[in-house]
Amino acid sequence: MKTTLGALILSVGLSGCQTAPEKPATPVAQPRVVSLTPNLTEILFALEAGPQVVGVTGNDHFPPEVDRLPKIGDMQLNYEALLQLHPDLVVYDPSLNRQHLAQLQKLGLHLEPLSTQTLPEMLDSIARLGVKVGKPDQATRLVAKLREELDLCRKRRDKMSYRPKALVEIWNDPLVTAGQGSYCTEVLELAGFHNVVTRPGYPTVDLEELQRLDPEVLVLTHSLPQTPGWKRLKAVQNQRVLEVSEDLLVRPGPRVIEALHRLQDWLELRQPVPRA
Image (cartoon, rainbow, N blue to C red; front, side, top):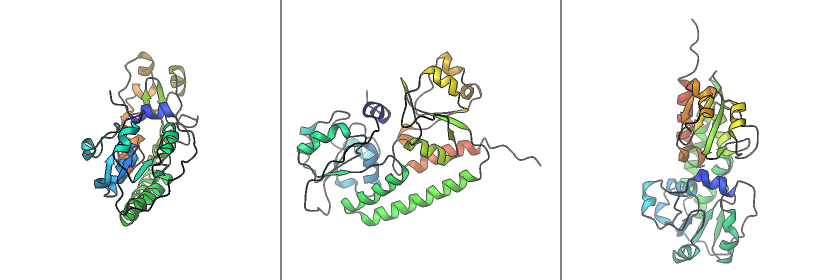
């Protein structure tokens, strides 16, 4: 079974880590790139650098072109396969790939850490990555477009009067949620929801805590568990369950705008109608 990014977050955690030093290298105008996280792969293709991508992980499946690319592992990387691709540049997220850093450093590869755990970090990483792969103009245009779209989403949110308390399900067995300071919470609250989870990061929540939190809205990236505890939740009984693709909501990248539109479209349909 394919490992999802939600499972990857659960396994490796989101704590900080030391950044791997770069291998001194002569810049390559059109470098051969290996991406170690699906969201960085999506960013590369959005920068029109897809033809330069020579390897990705088994978690990658967007855009469809990645299906034809060599896979160099998932949570466990195949370092031999990675070396055989002869990359000029390996891009990674220092939080999600922290377990790989020591071995990657030993291989003497040109490594580029790109943190994407917040919206500002994601935008900054797009700009940096554009320079690294010889696509600075494309990066400038993409960042400007994303900033414009994010600003429009903020303005749309500010016009809403229905701002329900929600819980985001990242993984359902055990239940992993988006907590304070997380990228998913940033997206959720930009859309117009309030997160009921007060713990930081991506905490695991048991059924007792879930029932105590009893959110008005459940935002699911997987299917709703068919258990009595879940069925008693206010959100389920009131049919306030919203499903959003894990790829859109969990992976920091250009498709964040699609996630925000999905969340805000749902909210707008439930805004109270002003009385005449």
